[in-house]
Image (tube, rainbow, N blue to C red; front, side):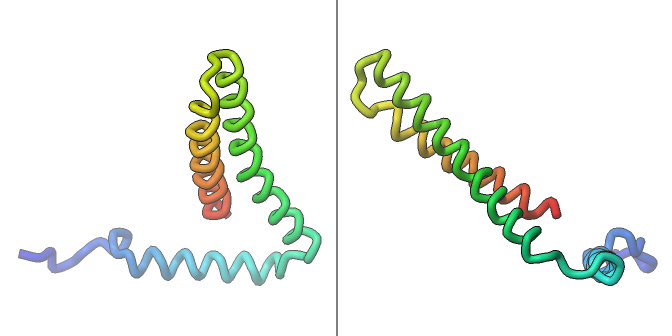
Length: 96
């Protein structure tokens, strides 16, 4: 039997409405971001993605040189870096 008096904190519609209201209030207080700040965020996002990718490639090449294994470690570690960079970028974008 459904609860006749559900808690409004548990309702996803109420949570989304509060989130939208909070974002709108913050926008009214702070206004839009400047072009410079937006460009800086894009630059940071690029570095967040590129650094793990290059680190994985560098470490993979180092392992391949030490072990004499061609590109056996380079490709998987670069892919791991791409995944880590993508996940980090996703978390950074959604944290704001």
